Image (cartoon, rainbow, N blue to C red; front, side, top):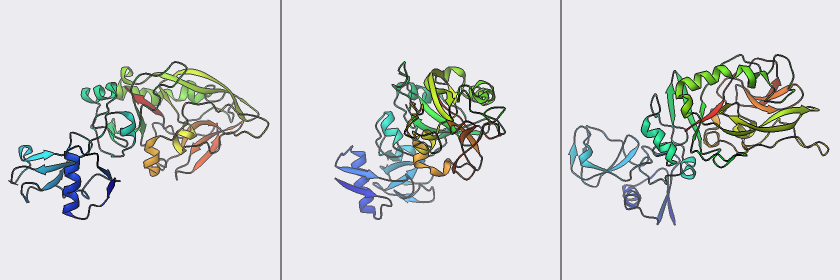
Length: 323
């Protein structure tokens, strides 16, 4: 198997790869870190194109089939594939979790987009794509992250979203410096998260926000999470694993006490795998992970992992899924 890597240096290589894509060839695997001008020149209405020329137009790779000059004419160009920015991409969560794109998907989720989510095909949606609603950028962080998880299996296809910015500032985890009761017992869980929930529900509608089963900490002993249970969940603070890929400050096994670290949110969201810079959004925001008897985990403005006393005021940046 041969690989063409970014950038494609010659027209000959471009044609060979594009024709392989167009014909659905499996003999060539194409590995790009960015879909864009490195594949072919961007279309320009001031240029003339001959038959078999290749151009990029709206992040799609096209082959000229009729000699062309002037404004874009879709009848003169043939897309090399139906979707995926010029690539044949499998219509499932695994394939779409593996590609970062970062394109705007509009100012609301369309009926066609909801249909693609509900069918689990996720057509023309990739990690990093986003909707801007009410001035907030909601960015795709994962596809089917909770699928088949829970004490009752989640069998609803979904897209996990994380806002680029905090939805609410100066919020406390508790009114005093304690983690007693864990995340479920916190004032954040019972009251202070309601404002962000309202904003998100207004943006997407309650019928399109995934309700699934989540395993959450509800007790703390000797500064470590000690118990938890299954709860219905829609919009929650993230834990350290979702953001960093592992626990950083959360209580660890010390050889005597085994902390309650059971969770279905056990892997890093693909968004943060590909865009480490999006972890640090120049604001400080809470995570739900318990660090000690008085400290919850958080992300500092510079993107560094940290923790702070529960009674301090920080930002709220929750994760949720639409379906």
